[in-house]
Image (cartoon, rainbow, N blue to C red; front, side):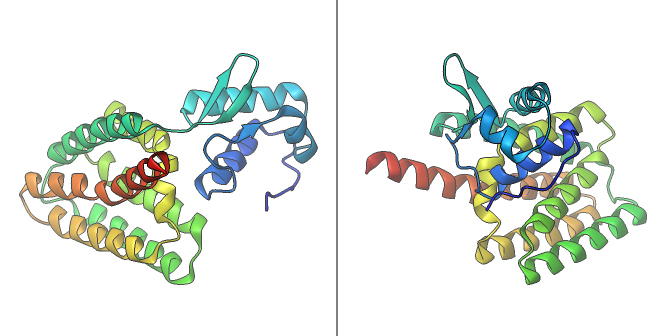
Length: 221
């Protein structure tokens, strides 16, 4: 059920709320975002709603078409493959640029984030899982020292939200994910950037593969 709390006219909070609905499947790919419906949910001006939709469009999770309005972006198989090709290139490069062995401070920070992530997995807290996962990766990739590269990684993480969301409630995929996180921490303690880079690429595959299987089997049916 969509939440109806008062967002006080804050555009960023509305963007966050709608993005969260997309992440957790409350708004499915292709779902229309009707301004009047959003006005009934959020006690703000129409201008604020339109600005929030514009921000979501800039983030790549919403599309707007003439005479159709805004809708949650539906990724085609080709789009998924192309987005993940870019994600693989960006994350591989960032991993190769991290100075190894990593600092004790970075190892400790990532270890603490992983503890939080594991706790959310055990309790089934989806929002916490999502936020801790993103925090883990952005913290690690920030060690590459190139803020523009990290911003690009974050952008493509957002573009792939519909793909990534399918793993949040799947315990088997979550167990694989946290195993990968632990392996990344161990790789950061060593000196082989190529091992770390391959782990970062391998980590992307389960969600992508599952999503492609789902949409392609749906098209076939």
